[in-house]
Image (cartoon, rainbow, N blue to C red; front, side, top):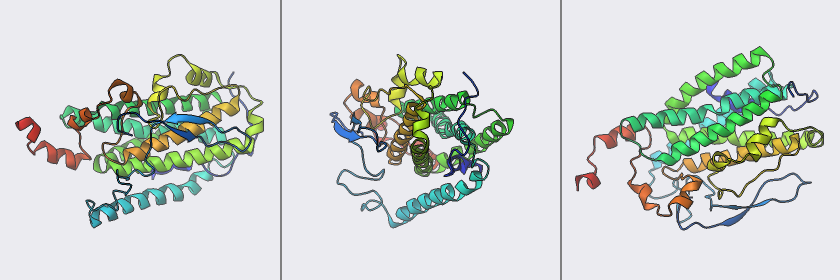
Length: 330
């Protein structure tokens, strides 16, 4: 139950009290396509360069999905559907529970959510580091991207703290203890089925995007009159934006450079960050599909990735560890 509370923090009841501050994929050569960002009705369409993305995390080169491909057994198809159904059911059902706690305290809701939002990425990295210790995993791209995602979520958290979301001790207590249980659950889920863990995170990030989108549409004009938190200005417009580019795996590095002139701009960029997380989690559901955006510039030869040790879940890792590797035998 604790694991899924994060998605519930984005309930549909918004801003019943005024705002206030408490304190002052994967193939070379690189192709580029034009992709339009989601925007409000009054905003201009923003066009960005991006890497070609897959419309489905299970899509294959011939346009079919892995679920429908011949190589996927009927049993595995059912497993995938069950995993996704469970994730969707959990994220949808728990929304109503925390809505009762945060129906009129939006910044507090966002603070709790962002405290928990980093947890999946910590869990992913923990499991991958364990695999590395046993020699089961050698793909650095996953660790790089997941750390960059946690770094992005941490700055969302710092923004909510500057807005006063952590003012009440109960909110801090709740968020921190939920995070502990969420971490344990995600570690176990990721070890058993990375695909399911990534899909669960996609559900959370997708709901987060939709919620922030509603948030800025409801209070957009009011937010435009408020100054941005200093931490947001430093994060989005600083000199070193390597990690900012790193978590946006569907984009060419340096293609997104936000402007931060008011609080409205801050929430627009947080919303767009959540959309990028959703794309990355979707890509991760196809095993071996993730590459660092900077890897394209460093090495266009993707054949190197095929030689790196990896595995899909702890059962697959153990199986591969006791099976002779033909490449090494030669």
